[in-house]
Image (cartoon, rainbow, N blue to C red; front, side, top):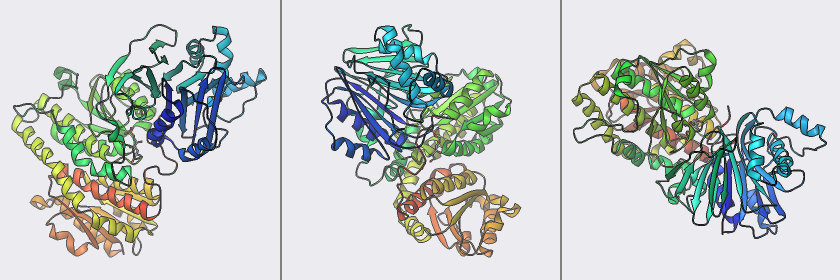
Length: 616
Ligand code: M6R
């Protein structure tokens, strides 16, 4: 949550910082602020509401021409989204400005300590204590901002990224991180600090990953990194492999629309380069030796939200292909229930951002119990892949809209590759069987393209149903997590009551919800071979329709059995059942996006949400 930018260099810092915040606004958008540091002067401006409010305030003021500055876009935790609680927060002497992402858990006692010293806190935030503590520490360490930051960090509990500037030494920006994200961008005679590379990709692609509990000083002349005790720390430089245009709308009205349209490419990119000339899967980034993978007796997927739904889909496939039991667990629940994990457990942590705190904590817990952790992640250098034993990156490119779309499809693909790789290594499947499934997977980008060509009908249905108080989604087998995902999209974007159910569960309670005209979206599996699964869901459609539901049926082209019971039909291309989520989810994304648009909502930045949930 919260977006952080810091800059020191030769450009106007305000422009660089505001441009960076624009790219990070998806991380939090209930208030924003900037601070500029010049010799003997600190200039700040902050405003509640979206970044546009800050930009308007800045335009009405007379900012000094600084080349050092910091900026913040906030998702409130402690204290509501007001001007006063917006970051930066400034030390009592007015010299140090600090921005923060995370939660300082011992802030109450630090607040009391400061109050006892006669320091009046102007906000309700946990962040302000850090500003005062650093401000007080500075004179005790000869004005060395990095040392003051280290001393303060050693006193803080919780998760935090802090970035500070000091008007006494405006040639440096200092950052610190524990559990929350912070990356460094290195340019020619300039340097950047940011929650993610999107903030500075316009200026440089050379970046540095920071580790846990590190403090970084950036100057025009270079970057210094130490641990919290001041010892030099190892850092990992990397090059960002996408350019600034990947994080632009590129002619689309919404990031979400662009990201939905990018799905065929995202799926193809995630498959690319992972199959050798003999048709065998090669997952070079899975660094767990095959001997250990053969010993695995249980797989646990941990993830949140959409990534959790991808994990639920993967469970069906991985169990089917490997015969290893797979549990899929909400990361936020996992470590609190004394789960049974050990050295023979493979934990798969799925996260687009690689920074979701619940997922990070779940995987850390699993590692403590001796489990091996494999991350499926879309963000190179993020904390979750860095702390995992192995990582399989999804190549979706930056996902900016808060509602996850292309990440979902690529997470399913990556998890399937893991499942097939395990089946290959453990000998559950012959090479030609794996190859056959990979061939089917390779056809999915073209199929997703076909779906995208025909979604105008889905938009019409969405507009027609936009005033419905509630929408239900049902599915069976892998169609069940697809139904959950369809409902999640509608909740977060259209702010409507929406529920996903396993269709077989309806008669055990939820069918009582159905009343005349209630939309029910049904995800129908392939009729291939007249499967029992298919026949059962056709009965479920009839059951809800008999009780007045208005049925929106997502079915495979040519599936005539559903026609008599569908008020609306959305056709998707034929796919083997296990691959159907890759096509059947797409109309549901479009449905939610269009419904939210029809209701006049901000699709890319829905209320109360943030893209990257970096607090538990
Ligand atoms: O970055 P992650 O994949 O770990 O994020 C997990 C969830 O917060 C995320 O999928 C969330 O549910 C999306 N907003 C849903 O569209």
